[in-house]
Length: 161
Image (cartoon, rainbow, N blue to C red):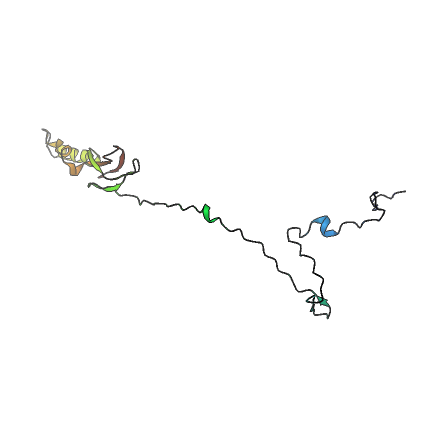
């Protein structure tokens, strides 16, 4: 007759009953630590006397081997950091982000806010006969666009106002 919850040995070729698993094996406590090797039999066991006078083995320290990087697989990546460029009313020497060539920018002048304010101011002062359009001919009063001479890409703009 079997009692529920009692331990019975598995029937097999050996009729010797086996012990149940230990608590650590059942719960898997400390299963991530490596198991120390069994001590080697010999005349010198290296026993150390503990505080209670009983002999005990010295503590074993284990280290995990560190993987060595493959010398053939070393990749070196060079990163170039380009500082932001401030555009003014003069050409700038720079590396074009479109074509990746060293260039000196080409300038193009366009009417901007300062040009129109100058034109309006001249109209208010009485220059209505056409003199009010003089700011559209003066590059120092217009906004500046910087272009790449190779790929014609717009690189930046300098606004006067």
